[in-house]
Image: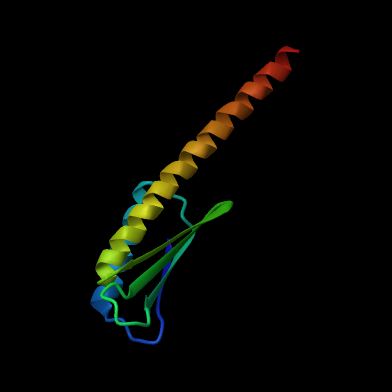
Length: 113
């Protein structure tokens, strides 16, 4: 999986980039055909405590999954976004399995006719 990390209007240290790559790399155990992933790190304007934003985008065959999380640290926001993507992957896999099994049933019914 090709992974790109971009920090917008600041420089992210290598430790943070390695953390993000490690966390998103774990998504491959749920879906092994991830083409590439992109991560955008932003600091929101304002005096709020939760001003760190992480946006993750996964390109998979035939689809694109996206998650955005905001927290007080980039690590916490990354954890939230990765968890959201994990749920989306499970939903996507369930949906494709259901469609494939329905397709097989339709084919078997048409062969009987």
